Image (cartoon, rainbow, N blue to C red; front, side, top):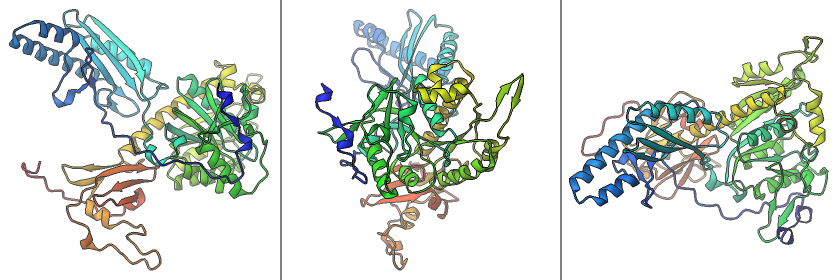
Length: 535
């Protein structure tokens, strides 16, 4: 049994303890999102767009049974034509997050057509099981295919293949299988940040996602009070030297409060070490979302978290008072400098209703002021509710104990917002910097910007500002103009957090190019078209 191979964490966890990190895994191969047609007779999947179409099982059997090659060829042409009709119909469905049709997004899988029966079967594979528009996709897919004149029956199945972490090769093993990491922050204590973090996590879990919560407040951990797992002490695998998270209602939990030591009394650098160890050596497994309950402030602990974990997005929690806004503004600026997008503001304890009237005991405007001043797109109001406070003390989140309440509906809206915004951010980051082989230029579209521009690869390589290219003491350029070939091409471009890309060059050099720096480099204006021979 597992209990025979694990030990209590507090016997291993030491303040300032080193993070146990093995050699980084190689980055996963980059996948191109295109539709595939899967043959059910154990033939391999082939790409529709390359002109190779796998035989439909029923049609291929008929073709093999016939001794006439022209007949088989006619059936293959017919099959290809029908598949094109189906895909053209499905391309009318637009993903509201990406602004692209579901065929181009690569959502259509396992397309099978039985022409004799007029039956069409396919699977829509989404990027998250918590997709808020999956029911709409299923309904629209049935409708657009059913109107084809030769179709008599449509079979649509829904599945989810969560997007692979785009920074997986650069992360500690514990974080390498987490698709999105969401920070819930306020930079001020007592505004309900932990309440929002816990209820958001269980809302995402209720939407079908795999979720974990990391309580990063070592001085005053809230998670042990707000949830009530059966096992209240973290354990460690003595062989792997990894932490095994506890669970409650399917959500994985890690908090210093579960380490058997209560609240910490230690200095900042020691706390940073403990947080690093708790976060990176935990066996989180495959998660769609890891929600981090950030501690108050903008000091070493917060910066450590932002540097260790590639935060996908942040949710800001505030209250109506002006004093809360002042501290929250500091946190928003911190995330801005670290290139972490703030996707939503939650204004807690806004109002209460009594005698048919709505009262605002703490005034109005803090949340809307954050939205207006920093351009954060979404604002959610939470009322003063005794049940919300009581649920935080009972160990059962409000969205679990009363899923139909007004508070639960607000968290449902917040959950939908987080899912949609994380999907957009991942798409923007993964395609921000690419190499256009046709133009022989690096194409740049910085996240959260509508501007797109081209850079010459040699110019980018010559503008490297690392110690290998520039003397750190004198600022003298060590790499000379002639040291870089004019026709140099990057071998690989990978995102690094939300702020930079890593470019690997043919000589093995790996260049870190921040978006801010790329925006200052001389750009290509007139790109001459390539000759037919070059194309």
